[in-house]
Image (cartoon, rainbow, N blue to C red):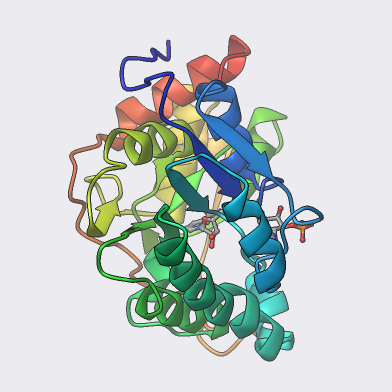
Length: 260
Ligand SMILES: NC(=O)c1ccc[n+]([C@@H]2O[C@H](COP(=O)([O-])OP(=O)(O)OC[C@H]3O[C@@H](n4cnc5c(N)ncnc54)[C@H](OP(=O)(O)O)[C@@H]3O)[C@@H](O)[C@H]2O)c1
């Protein structure tokens, strides 16, 4: 059950990229604190739209979830990807300073030792954020994550045995971001355990009481076989303790009870 203990009615945040999965969960969990701002209202590559939004808002925080998150799209449109994911963030940071808003920018585990354009764009995005603001580095799962989505609809998944990550649930992530909103600099929000995609899928199976032998098919990532170069070990040490098994169990339970 999600509680609102970290929430205070008076603190408000504008969430850019208001159509994102992350933004939708912010609205669900902190409806009184966030205003979602979709791309058609504020395109982060348009400084005029950012200015007019910030000038007319009394919100203290700006949470930037806007990005191209499709890694293959970034590979095929590198200029567009760098423009939205990195260059626009630097302008956004400067405007947040000017209009006295605290920027909370969402980065990625792939920003560390990037192996593809998306990772490089997230690495560059971090460089454009003023040190007095907050950068959240993370990796998260939701009901839209491939393995979770498939297993929720009782379909078997193929999952890499040799790619590692340490994701947190989107619910845990949203709550943590809000809890640490006054922090500055870089914060790593990840699970404590580094697991392969296959192990992750098996954990989801167990939470759903599905037999991993039947529903999780191990496969191997082959370097160079895909357009996208992936980082084999994308795990990052977390700054806050989050137990993956418990997080998965709570997320799955909440999903079944219609709670986010
Ligand atoms: N998903 C993950 O596992 C993961 C992991 C680590 C970090 N992150 C980061 O977390 C953030 C949110 O991820 P997500 O998966 O929730 O995102 P998402 O669902 O893919 O949504 C991204 C949103 O950004 C919007 N957008 C794209 N270009 C924009 C622009 N120029 N101006 C304003 N909005 C724009 C998109 O709008 P349209 O759809 O209309 O284009 C979309 O609503 C991103 O910064 C992502 O890099 C995600």
